[in-house]
Length: 310
Image (cartoon, rainbow, N blue to C red; front, top):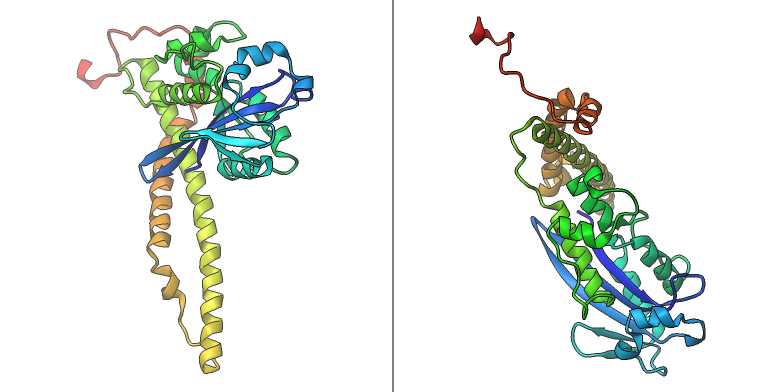
């Protein structure tokens, strides 16, 4: 499972070509089996105030909250005590934390642009597609229920049961990153589907999509393991030859018995079976989605095809 980074930047301007990020918060969610851990990080940077928009500084309460001495370059500001560091060290730390992660935030495209400017060319090692909590919340309640564009984040946040940040936390990088995490969790929670036609259809589409994704991921993992297996076979053969002057086989069992490989194979088989079953219903996914966009369909009180009615 991929790491998720809930991110937010406080900046000196709305335009990344003019301004810069002065505060960056990341909550890194790392999977651990069926559970996960969240680790919070906050950095602040010294800035060039000559290009700063006074309104942007006011909104982020820059003058009240900025802790970086100009001689430092940057500082790790939380959690825990403030720790001065060079700008280069802070950039390196952020690159490391975000490497390979999927970005989630409130308007994460904004944060992506400022992070790229801050970290420099080639440093954006996170997933190329960030996810906006507004869109996730809209998907949770339904696009029609979310209303006309542009969607309002505070309204949709409350619609999924998450109160937006209070005044003291709003427009702080960590406060907004925590908000993004909470909305994500509310939008992604798996609920029992209602015993209605629409509920059953949504549940079927969800199973179909989830299985397709898991099968694709497992097939990719299995391909990587097979490559590792083949490489290990070559290495073992070379070791045999170096030791005794000839290849002694068979050597396949040495690697094939590794639990990870067997587990991956079994998982792929199980998902492939589940995929085959769901494909029977998945072919009608388009019709299901089209029906969900329309009004509820009444259920007939009598079904003439029911053998019990004969």
